[in-house]
Image 1 (cartoon, rainbow, N blue to C red):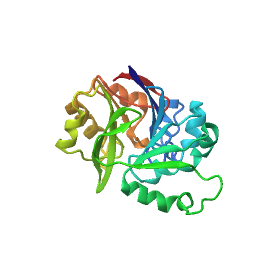
Image 2 (cartoon, rainbow, N blue to C red):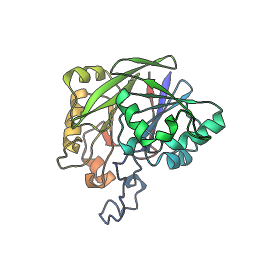
Image 3 (cartoon, rainbow, N blue to C red):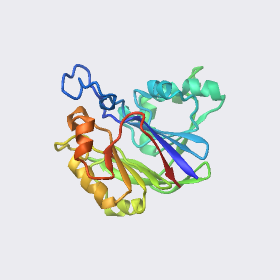
Image 4 (cartoon, rainbow, N blue to C red):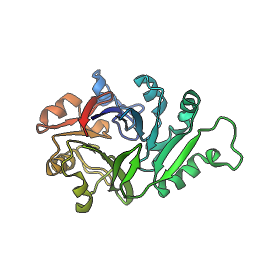
Length: 257
């Protein structure tokens, strides 16, 4: 069996280009230099699993021509990863069922502030219909499959990455402990955030992500959550070591379980 992964978005919190930017990257005509907010679709054993529903979630679903969501996993509570949650409503209508959401208690508390109307005792008609499942930094079952959370640090904020079979997805991190790195042993395809070339308080730089990818040793690593400051897609990819590439919106691949 194999799982199929599609990048719905590979950009940072403002997307690429951010509003008004006139940089070389933002003016590029290469579609690989246009990045929606970071999100990924994992199709595993007939199930469509979304990791993070950022502000571009509606457009990402339309662009992908996807009208089914079997589960949502949240990495953390920042708005560029959660703001599109309301757009699950047409999925509720099409599927005629609630959508399970897997998240930490910390993320749930934030969603209660961001989307207070979803949690009203007497719900308003037409709100998103969701079943919230609390997870911790412990292996959990998802449709009969094992998902292994990987806790990373986004400055001082704990964030979860996820390992599904031989695929691992980590976004918004600038530190991973040795204990958590152990969970990535033997992974075939790794996705890791790489914001830009210069230092940042809460994200790996391109060099830091490259060094970490080489340490982990996956057969293939893709970088995501990139800003326009990382450089032109084709030029950066040409400089990276073999087996390490920048992801781009719409990139699809399969990974064996």
